[in-house]
Length: 315
View 1 (tube, rainbow, N blue to C red):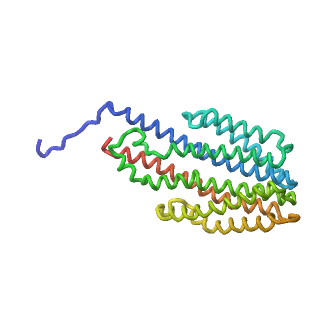
View 2 (view 1 turned 90 degrees about the vertical axis):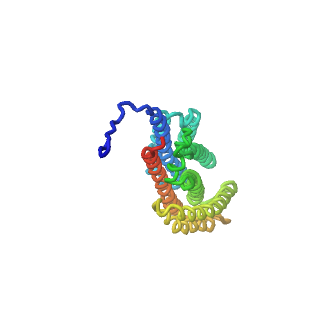
View 3 (view 1 turned 30 degrees about the vertical axis):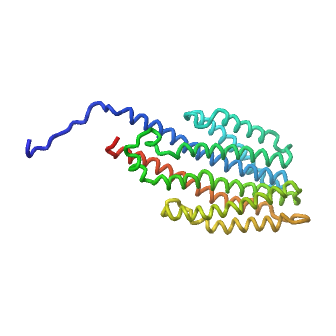
């Protein structure tokens, strides 16, 4: 009727409820992936510290003892929690991945004082490499927009505009692959450098490993610098602390030069193992803070993507 406003009553039963159930199932799986990524990052951080301190102890620096004992218990608990989280998720980490991680930790922690230095180092590196591979696998769960994953192309372009898929993939690659890989290289320098300074010598095998990882760090730092410029151009301050990477790059170069000057030379080594460990740890902690901020940003985008899907009238 003219001049009248027709009232529409909401339907008592939503005939499209299946679409919401399918969407939420994928949303929850990705939320589980983000939680596993966070826990994996913390586990990797603890394992890298455990490697550095154990190398220092094997080199003869007993000042690490008390903190190392606490860290050993913490790392044990983190791996158990990671297994519990993985078991509660929808096969995001395979049984084989979980068992390999558990076996690697048991091998490291059992009678580690009796291990040779090279065995201790390689066993830690193996555990961390496995964890980084799991991190990359979990990140692939987050690459494709949910609508596209579900085969819904009707509003894919609209929902994909926030954030753009390009921006999302750039941050995802930076925080789950590039920056963690650089952190691991710095962690290896910390471990080998701390050992050499504590022991007062470095054999040819460890010398070649240390030289190689320093070279790799310099190369990947160049890649990191270019990626930071790209992110600054597209993020507009979305990741906190990103600008600090520039100042910490100077600290990283100082660390590399100090290790090359004080350790990679002929004759006795008189470097301070605590100084090397602490400087490297300061750099690593800032880098990992940026990783955490990046994951938080991806999580915010994940929620915003669902909101965008809900307000769309095309599904």
